[in-house]
Length: 416
Ligand code: PLP
Image 1: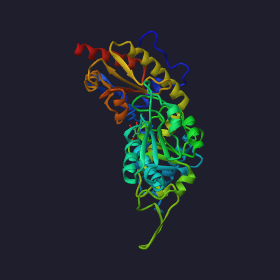
Image 2: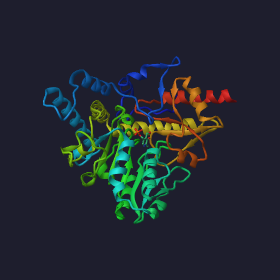
Image 3: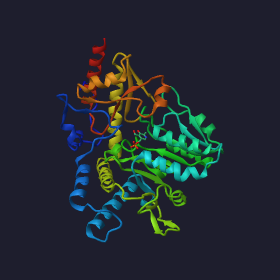
Image 4: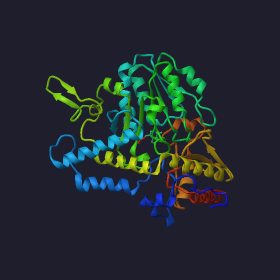
């Protein structure tokens, strides 16, 4: 660590203790200690999450909601407790507003089909931003093709920030939904979501927020944000894969038709007609990812035990240190230089292809992501086919940024 590197002092986190919570960080890659800078793609799991999932399968495994026997009741209780914990974590007014899904992608598709589709007329508009992940682009595109609605895109500037004036101008009567990412996975930009929601509300336009990359980095309060829907994934916030959340305002969820039909989402079925459960059950057809939900509840407990303010403070220091350190490397160019950023350092290194950068530094034990990060339009906005992306998690350290920096210098030497 260089002499100027900041420490954990004052952030409320004991980073050595945090690292000890993540068993995978003990392993080596190509004979070097693993340095994991790919949290934006999927975070590592703390032992508490792994244990919660194991404990479910070892001691309580059964299907939920339908059984009178003890195991089924225990499983149901654990699943519903996870919903209550998750609702508390995002300050949802009620646990019934938390729908468990497979992840952000499914949450957005659910809103597209159940909330937006029935309201769309040809010529209506869906508004998104230029920095969206494909999961907040493609479902809308498909819906527009089906209905004759039009997809409109709010521009960004060269720092990777939303053009707020343009956004304000684009909020017209024709817009039936505004979908916006809270924290961009490709740039790290933190969008002013509360301000955006307030603007949209003036025009009566509902707002869906893609919170996949915000949840692991900062406290999220859906009431303070003022959005209508908030979507996120368990695996980005130290929980299991295959579980995620759609939070929606109760009045929307009540009015929305089911997304999928099957068991659990019904109240009464005859061959002539079926009636449906209340939300959230109405949207959770079939046997859900019970262990995943319980693991997500454990991830919420874990993040709450650290304190999201501490997480945000630690990662802000890492980001500032990393930005300064890496910017000293010849040929390094940061892609995404917004004033408000979280968790992501995307870059190009001279004219070395991003995939080559990633492959070479993997030999140093350093895991980063390369490519378009499922956000092709924004990478192309910067005139690039791909970037390299080092993304931060609570377990990263200043020493690891130094290792990344040395590995990048080694890559440059190889291509000199
Ligand atoms: N939105 C953003 C900003 C993301 O970063 C991702 C995943 O990388 C997604 C949505 C999709 O998440 P999932 O694949 O878990 O559905």
